[in-house]
Each structure stands twice: as structure tokens, then as C-alpha cells.
Amino acid sequence: MNDDLLIRPFQNNDAGELKRLIREDILAINSRDYGLETAQQLADAYTDDLINLYTQKAVVFIIVKEGCIVGTAGLQDGRVRNVFTHKACQRQGIGRRLMSAVEDEARRQGLNRLKLRANLSAAGFYAHLGYQVVEEKEETIGQAVMKMIWMQKDL
Image 1 (cartoon, rainbow, N blue to C red):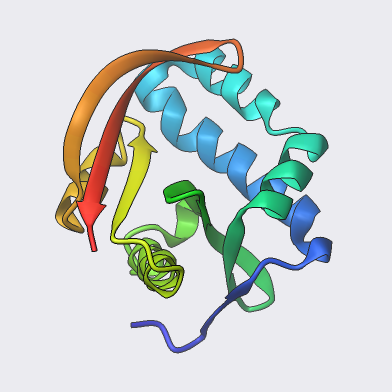
Image 2: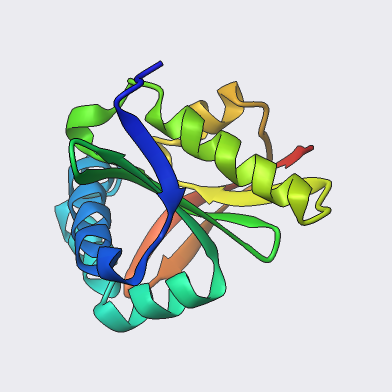
């Protein structure tokens, strides 16, 4: 595992870099599954106001490498939210570390099950971590219509 990675809680001064990471990741990953127009609509939904609202309501984790945010994940009301890893840092264990932090936080909160909504590209990652498909359905997210996969895991 990467020893040069620091996992920590979100801080207010992370908002701009967090927004940039999420938007870039959506465009890089979701455009493959849903097309560039849909990915752009989804990325555009991540406004400053949405980031601020999310970070106020969720427990948000950040992974920092060499002073830059390279990953994030959150927990809100028993649901895993906004798991993103910088495209240059994928397949290096960052997502796994983030999910471990979220699951540990869920246990600390007394939760015995986590739910999440996965895009097509991420479903295999979550399945590898023990999440099971509950439902697949088309959803409107912002102005985009996307096939999403609802999954859950007993802790």
C-alpha cells in the first residue's frame, strides 16, 4: 500500500480541489459509459453550492498525495457517496482505502448495512469489495439520464 498517502477528513479549504477532482473524474470515466454530453451534464451538476451542501451533511474523507487531493469518499445517512479517485492514481489501492474508511465510520455510527449507487464502470469494483446488486434502473441525475446500479453490503 502507498505509504505516501494521507487519508483525512474534509476541510473547508478543500472545496475547490474536491470539486475539480469530482468533475474531472466524471468526465474521464462516465463519458466512456454514458457519452460525453451526459457526463458533462453530470459534471456540471457539481456546483459550489452542491459541494458545500454535501460536505456539510456527510462525513467526507480525502486522500492526499504530495499535497494534492487524489481521492474522496463520503458517508451520509447510511449511504456511500461520491467515491472518486484521480484518473492518474486509479488501481493503486486508493479506492479500497477510502471504502475501508467509510465502512469503519459506518460501524462507528452503529450501522450494520451500507448502500450505494454505482455507475457502470464502478460496479465491478464494489462487487469485489463485497457489495451486492439490489437493483438496476435508469435515473435522472441533474439533467442526465443514466443506468445506475444500486448495491448494498452487510457490515
